[in-house]
Length: 120
Image (cartoon, rainbow, N blue to C red; front, top):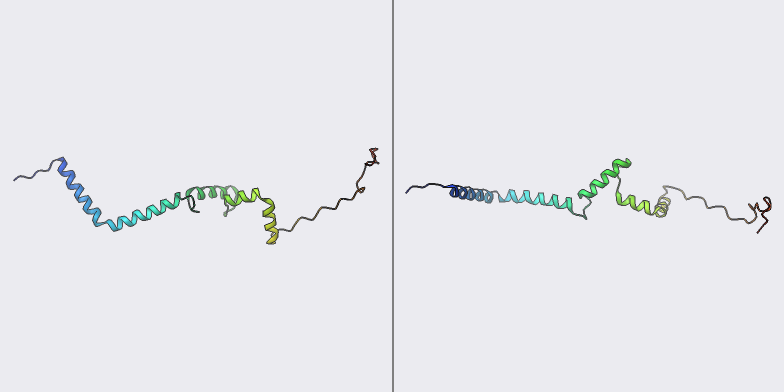
């Protein structure tokens, strides 16, 4: 009996050998796939603080402002809520409150008679 391998036979032998190799290395391959999937999952997870968009936007903001701890969410809050930020800064002693304006005193700055307009 003469054995000869045709193209299909060669492909079958290579496939069986490849499957045997994968089976033998399944633990190491599984670990590598698992860690790669975890890294990719974290990079695209919208709730993660280490996803690509979060790191990219904050990196650009840090470069533009010179503040290494720049955070877009905090910047937006501070921009849209200046009174809250000022109250927080006063509470922690970072700034002092502005002095209250002088009370209104009728007649103190009434120039109506001086310029001929008459008093109201």
